[in-house]
Length: 185
Image 1 (spheres, rainbow, N blue to C red):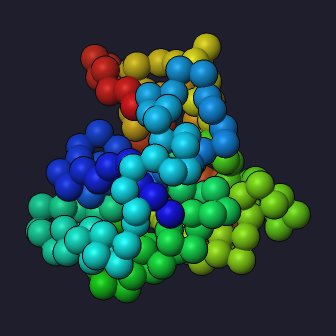
Image 2: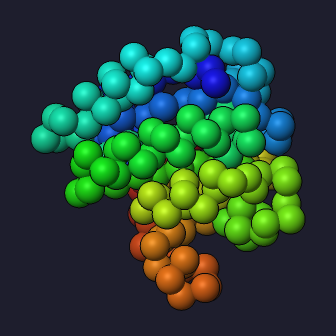
């Protein structure tokens, strides 16, 4: 796997100060994507054990509340083994830190075992580590800069543990726009 960039003090892609990994490779090619260079699976740097160690090390800082995974597309089948390993390690070493993921795939697509576009033998393990999933492709015609932590109105901010345990999609309170907030991905 390759990655485009890592932000060690990110405040735009999840609540609080986070470490954000932007993986490379995406087949969605959303019109108006804020990061189209990461569509290319060969874009950026090689993701190595050293990269993973640096990400994990960044989570030791008290003010960093968690890890965010973006792209590109973290749930492309080629990326999932690396994403799984990172998520499991982060959850094991820092159980109180949250893991957010942004994916153009919906949770329903990820849970569909017959959907080979995004479901692999790693998918369930990844989902078990996530606290929040921002799902759905970015839709330029539904762009809304008053939304929290998402770029278009079709995207959902899902509480993954509650959704997995209930069998229903459970949205977080981050879905509510804040008056005057102009955050956009």
